[in-house]
Image 1 (cartoon, rainbow, N blue to C red):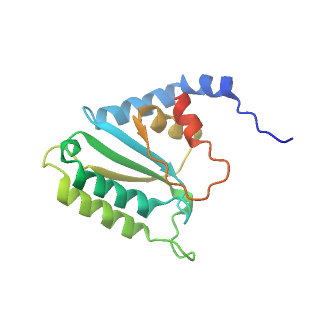
Image 2 (image 1 turned 30 degrees about the vertical axis):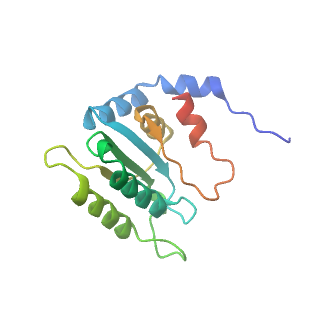
Length: 155
């Protein structure tokens, strides 16, 4: 076949799953009052993780009015967090970048402006994240058929 069909009706049913709804509500509660910029990536050299953190830091530098209103929540699929593979940034480096941004821009008592979450993934977890996300930040540099934006739109 020269095309790929997305099972849209199946996706819509999954979005009403209790696990998905609970996950989305939990994330919303954690970041109540904030615009959630979310991202869900594999841990590989094509996901643009360093780029994403650097750009978000620059965004906060340039747009002071958003410093207390947004949070970047970066989810990383834990199955691929071994940074010993060639061309990979260490997970510790990503956390250092997040810590630096939080130190510079987070307001005490208001939580971080960048949170990195490493977790085993499931369809329900991923859809819950996308449902809670206000803005999807996808910096994939070479991902082939990337369904995350489609799932975000549907959520």
